[in-house]
Length: 311
Image (cartoon, rainbow, N blue to C red; front, side, top):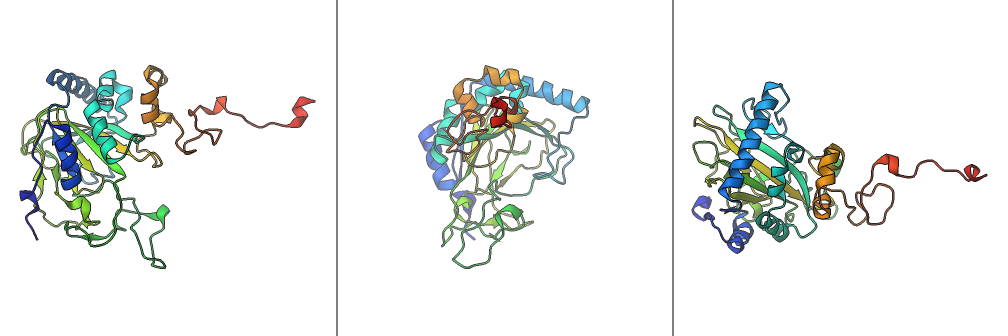
């Protein structure tokens, strides 16, 4: 197998180079995406929130991506937990990467923190858009779309496919809120794996790239790219925030239209409301009319009617 990690993207402050790295390698490292003081403010708010949630024994585990880990901490639905997190979602550089890979009408699917603590377990390599059915030839057997699991996938090597593969449906824009280092468990990624159409073989070792980046950077990867958090062998946590974007017809990881606090939504401008899923897209997400429009709660929608009521 070719040494993939020798052909890798380097950290860059150039947004156009970052876009090119996403195309070629399946991920990029964009430095200086937010000022150091903004990263520090995000970290202060997040560390305080995380400590309070741990103290109150709030469930902070993610069994879907880290089934064997009981050390790392997730802090979910960040828009409810501080205005400072809006700066990450609305960041111009982040949105430029999203538009490049997914297009202008992508939706925010998740905004949560992932804190890797010393003594954690290594996250298995995986891809984010595991739910995508594979292209097939007419008449071939297939896994029913509503029955997909992570096990119903083609596994193999990361070399470019010689057949049709799925397009990217997800872009994970992952924020380095603290410095990301090999010691504290930075994300490892497999260059070029986004073009393979395959998933990593469970338990197999691969020559991955460790995405070291200073605080305030973005590590962004295509939904098809093999990746996973690493072991934190240091003495301090690695603090990251995922702003995870998807195509507008995909169900969002976080149900923002239901789960966001009313005062948070009221502070949004129209573009923020759209990115969080409050605007109907091509009739998808409507709440009472097939026409393009804003979602509204049930009590504002038409209920049972009868001509008898008019008499």
